[in-house]
Length: 210
Image (cartoon, rainbow, N blue to C red; front, side, top):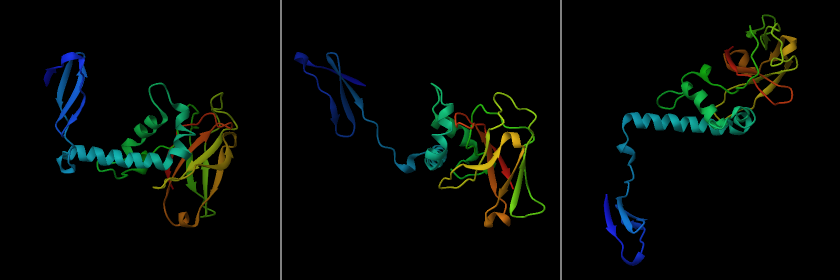
């Protein structure tokens, strides 16, 4: 780094070409080399992997920002971590080195202080292939786990999707979920969680392969 004296209080700041920057500092001008723009092929393989993974996470966040992050994750934001920070951190393990989704089981769409019930299960109905039966224990009802907590579900979609009410409350202990036509003959992932009746809090979610 070079320094140049400035006479008569004259100050100079700006950029000269692509290599030097003049910054006023008291009665001196500090001359620094301007950072060069990095070419795409100058990134190391590790840096390229990191950029691709972060790009995929950014796309994933944008797809779920309005329907998931704002109404759910922002409720758990702190002074240190925003809803965005929490959402990206929780979902990072689901994406591989090059940004591909490697494990849908590791995705998370809900978080919060509401507890998930014990013995939460999902199974296809033996009597009706177009229906899935969801069941859980009702033994642990408390101030945090309330009878009227709503059972919620969400299907992962690359372009984003909307959480939906399944039509049951915690106190009921079970619910029947009608399947879409394509789900009857194919396996699919569904994430289940509970929401406080007044939408003031949510539970963590759990993924099921049905």
